[in-house]
Length: 259
Image (cartoon, rainbow, N blue to C red; front, top):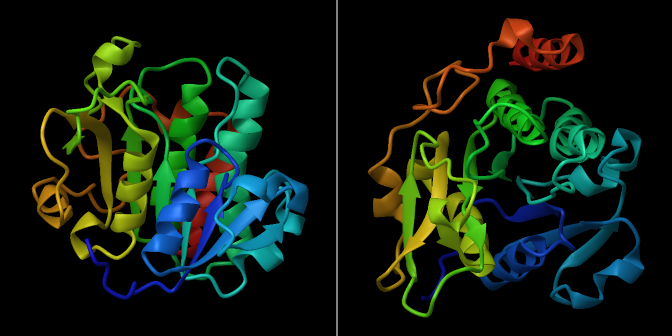
């Protein structure tokens, strides 16, 4: 499919050297974005699309991110911590979102955030992914939050992009749904220039069928998150803000105060 000129010209990819981030970098380049890849050091970037601009920074350290966020129009978050490591989850899944938003200093950009299917099941490292989602919603930036199923368990006929809401698939196994990494990248990048994808929270899986040429009708069929809500439109109310750690409540209040 031939791509139109992106509305948001410069996109920063956080987690660019990861297994999904590399696909996001390639897809953003393919769609005509000026693509900036955040890397810890330039030596990590050998597998990235050579058309991407490399910018060195540490996603867990806000003071290293000024160059990365300078003049960007959009940011896609694909970073992820090791499952079961709560300290790393706070630093990476949550901290990277917090730090990029802080580095932007209130400047509005389009956001694509990848978390995970099952993120609203309480407990463990997923709580920090969910808190990262809440930061994005509290920030007032236009966003699309994508919760992919199990990576690369697709068979050859599972090409149809399917978007769900409510995070109701909770088996904790590929029975929840499968999706290829390149499909995740496509959804994240496509969302950046789609009005109907704004302020959506979706679970992403692949069904048997052909890949759609245009994802706007898929986005348009969904419900947007309620204005001023910290959670997705159909998410369970099982993580009360008033019971969150004080530092998280402070971060949310600061973002909402800047809107």
